[in-house]
Length: 197
Image (cartoon, rainbow, N blue to C red; front, side):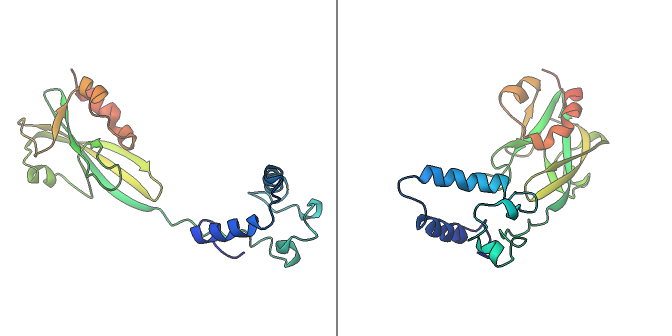
């Protein structure tokens, strides 16, 4: 079958074809035999060992000389790389957090403010005046279809005011109330250096 094995329609077609040949009295034996063939003969990561296959006399892939083409699986999409600036904003031993949108990547979780691209100017747009601003290094996190290449900016805020919905969190609050996603783990040591409570 030339259908992409990851597609639902191919899976439905395969299920229908298999239902016609699975012995009603021994479906478990049939399934185990198929798994054994896949593991020891058809080989998931190598050339199939057709010469020793008990199904070689009726295997259509072998008879049609298509063993190198099957199964068909579409290539993975290229992972999109996104440069992001992560803002580690501190005030009185606490770090600023905001909640991510309810839909999309890491939906609803608390995070250190971050934006694609970004730069120091965003702090002023958010109404935050930095007393000090310094670079905090880089980190990388890979999701299924996207890779974040992040650079941290460390800011000491002049005032307590934050944008609506943002919070200040100390060490205890980070541990018990605001679980920050592991995507930002590369900056945990910087946060740890600057917070208390």
